[in-house]
Length: 148
Image (cartoon, rainbow, N blue to C red; front, side):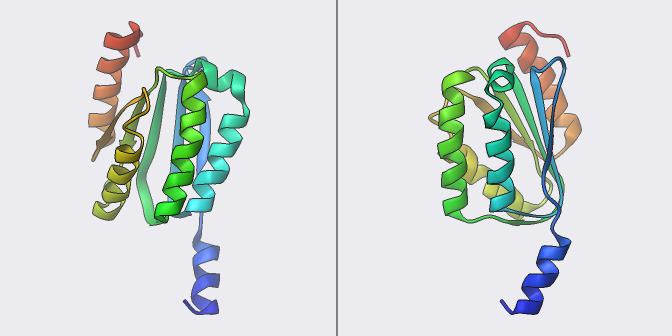
């Protein structure tokens, strides 16, 4: 990669955004543009530093439907999983829906789900927000008796 390509890529990068919602039982993480492994790790570090907020979580929505590029290595994913393992100790019952449209992003998401399979979390990957929300609503009702 040349310096110019790296500069353009950096300028085009948009960090992930996150917010806690529904009285703290939900977490929404969204990304647009190009997102790097460092972006993911930085967001996870910020989220997991708020231990009191993480304890309350029942669900997480990862909306990657607007990503144009995901610059993530296998090592980045391993580091994410390491952080998730620590978070699962304080928030073991969590439901996670991933929304991806791009085939490559779907593949990266499948790799993540394979590596987090040992966690007590239930996760699924969806191609549309509508499908993800329907599954989330049904699963929250069934698992926690929460209406959304």
